[in-house]
Structures are given as C-alpha cells and as structure tokens.
Image (cartoon, rainbow, N blue to C red; front, side, top):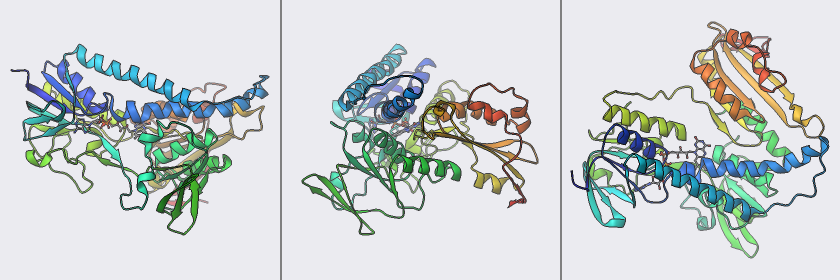
Amino acid sequence: MTDDQFDLFVIGAGSGGVRASRIAAMHGAKVGIAEEFRFGGTCVIRGCVPKKLLVYASRFPHDFKTAEGFGWTVPEPSFDWPTLIKNKNTELDRLEAIYQTNMAKVGVQQVRSRAVLRGPNTVYLEAEDREVTAKTILIATGGWPNLDDKLPGIEHAITSNEALDLDRLPKSIAIAGGGYIAIEFAGIFANLGVETTIVYRRDKILRGFDEEMRDAVINGYRDRGVEIINNDVFASIEKTGAGLQATLKSGRTIAAEQIMFAIGRTPNTRGLGLESAGVALDESSAIKVDDFSKTSTENIYAVGDVTNRVPLTPVAIREGHAFADTVFSGEAVKVDHKTIATAVFSTPEVGTVGLTEDEAREAYPDLDVYASDFRQMKEAFSKGEERMLMKLLVDRQSDRVVGCHIAGEGAAEMIQIVGIVLKMGGTKADFDNTMALHPSAAEELVTMRSPARQYSNGQAAS
Ligand code: FAD
C-alpha cells in the first residue's frame, strides 16, 4: 500500500469520525482522516463542551446570592467575558491536542484539509491538492446551523458558532428558535445579565419535551426576565447606530446588540461530491444509511449528524464505534437508538429519558404519573424559589417505568443514571425497593408512593 492508499479514509474529525478512525486502526486497518476546521468537531470546538463551560459560568450569579444565606459575605462580584472566552479556548486547545494524540498513537494519518469524494474509492484533499484512495470511506461531516437566507439583513445575525466567541458580552440579544440550543444560549446570556428575548415561530418552546418540563423552563426563564415571544418570526434585521433593529412578522420591533439564529441544523452534505459515488440523500439532505450505517454505495458508510438519526455526541460516537467493529473486526454491531437520556442545559436544567406523558398515554393507556415538585434544599436560606420537578411515568399493566423527567439542579447527572434503569426495563417496584439516599433531591425518585394522576384506557381517571 502506498502512502495515498488506505483501508479506511474518514471525512470529518468530529465525535463520530474520530472514534471510528481510532477503533478501525486498533483493529489493524490503515486509516486516514481529513478535517477542514479543527479536530474534535462540533461537540468539542463549537458545541457541547464550550457551551457547558459557558453554562457553568452563567450560574455563578445565583450561587453568589445563595452564599449569603450560608453566612458568606460576597463582595459585589464582577464578571469578565474575555477571561471566560480565553480560558474556554485554552481548554479547547487542550482537548483538540488530546484527540490528535490519541489518533496518532494508533497510527491514524491526519490531514487538515477539506475533503470531497471523487468516486466510490477516491477522496480529493483540497488543501494538499492530491487524491487518496480507500477500500472503505466513512462520511462523518456533521451538520451546520441554518440561517434564513432570504431574510433581509440576515448577514447581521450570528449562530451558535459565533456566540461562543464574541469579543464582548452584549447588553442585549434576541434569539430566533425554540429548540434546546436556542434555549441553552438564552439561559447563558440571561444569567450573565444580558437582556434576552426569544422569538419562536410556534406556540411553545422545547417542542418534543414533556409539557411540564417545558412549563418549568418557561416559568424559570420568565422569572429571570427572559421575554419569550411565541408564534412570530423575524421579518428583517437592520443595522442601527446602537446595534441592530429587528422587525418581526407581527410588526413588532426589537432592538438588540446581537441577534442569534438557532433554528435547526442541516447535515453537511453540500459540495461533498456524493453524486460522484452514488451516495443517496433523504429529503432533509441527510445521508441515507442502513442499520449498520452503510450508505447506498457498498463501501461508503456515514455516521453522526450527517445521517440525521439522533443528533447527539454520544450517538455519533456509538455509531462510529459500531461501524468500525462491523467493518474491521468482523462482528456486526447495530446501534440501539431507543431510550436515550438527554438534557437541556437551561436554568432550570432538564433531564429526560423515555416517553413524554403525552406519548406514554398513547402507548400505554393505563398509565400512572408520579410527580414531585419541591423547593431545593440549597434555597432554604435565600429568597430564591429554585424548584425541582420530577416525574415518573409507569405502565400500570407491566409496572415498567416508561419515562422519567427532571427539571432542576443536577437533572442531567440524575437522568444519566435513571437511563440505565429504563434501559434495563426497570419497574416502579424496583424504584420502591431501592433505599433512599438522604438528604438528596434524587431520593424523591424512589420515595414517590401515590400517583399524582392516573389514566385508564387513555382517559384521565377521576
Ligand atoms: P461533528 O462533530 O459536527 O464533526 C464533523 C466534522 O467534520 C467537523 O469538524 C467539520 O469541520 C468536519 N467537516 C465537515 N465537512 C468536511 C469536509 N468536507 N472535509 C473535512 N472535514 C469536514 N450533543 C450532545 O450530545 N450534548 C450536548 O450538550 C450538545 N450540545 C450542542 C451544542 C451546540 C451549540 C451544538 C451546535 C451541538 C450540540 N450537540 C450536543 C450536538 C453534537 O455536537 C453533535 O451531535 C456531534 O458533534 C455530532 O458529531 P459528528 O461526528 O456527527 O459531527
């Protein structure tokens, strides 16, 4: 094999591509990988990791306030955005280097270049103006934030990419969107004292989440002064002396220093040369794959956000790993996309796994809903009203817990563990048999004894 011939060539070094390349190399394959921006991909460079660091930063003002009740005298705190961004970038550099070292250790050849297909076995590396060939090709190019290209003045708007690297903290921001990315960024900015407005085209943010969790976030945001405008969209954006002025379809105007669009993401398939290799797309421009991530072309596979299955980092990693095992170890591995625990890092935070109450009611007509809503113990001395909301949805016929939803501090940490229980088919009796850990918020999950409401044949029982 020459230097330009590989067993596997991976396009895109994000969550899925990096994992696949490492595992394939560990199975003995000669692997190359191309990355056009930075190794680590969206999650590490402009997604989960930097976002969570900003979420941490944004929660300190509340902690400073709570501290006083516990006897601390906290001098008037001040906040420096450039320090946060500088430290965040240092951490990202560290993580990128780790990704590169880990791939190098197992012999993965890394190229910093945009790569496009030039046939089923040929990849063109633009930065080096050369072609490489590979028996198997993996496309792991992720997704890209949508912008409303037809909107007058859209060039003044930013996306999550730029929001993570602003030179200074804006005084005000208006965010288009109601999904988890829009809501998380709104929370970050609002907690840091930025006047924050959310503009959402539907009637309620966080579509797809349990209704009570949506309400918990909406109430929490309203308490923090975030304005949520529903059933409206941006019609135009203009630059003014002081910043930006947006006009909504309803005619309402909003002045804001920054306008951010978080209205969904599109799989990165444009200009990839997929047609040269016969790789088929679905109607959302995502690459169509089978259960083993194989595309319509026999030797080309795709994993992660570019396939638009479940666009989350752990899913991309699992798909990349399963692909590498299937193709390079001879053991066919399918990824199970059901019952995935996820979180919204809003404040209050939401953790969720399994069905929402509405979904559970349809799937399991005899349903018990256990719910607990209480003030967090940490709020005992302050005037804060930070609450915890917990829900267990139980199919009465089998006693299986089919959904769990938590809003409040630590929700993401708790739901990861509850996810194991649901994956194992855990029952309400299993929760009841588990001794509580006291004093904790999580103990509520094993001490809820009577249903808050019940459904029989899908109807609310009186
Ligand atoms: P990516 O990580 O997007 O990697 C694709 C890589 O391919 C990129 O580095 C890109 O530069 C490169 N590339 C694209 N085209 C080419 C080309 N032609 N040639 C060479 N390189 C190319 N997920 C979670 O699980 N939890 C979270 O909290 C979370 N938060 C998020 C917050 C934000 C703001 C965003 C945007 C996403 C978040 N996600 C989160 C989603 C998560 O980042 C993605 O699901 C994950 O990164 C997908 O991995 P991937 O390997 O499919 O693609």
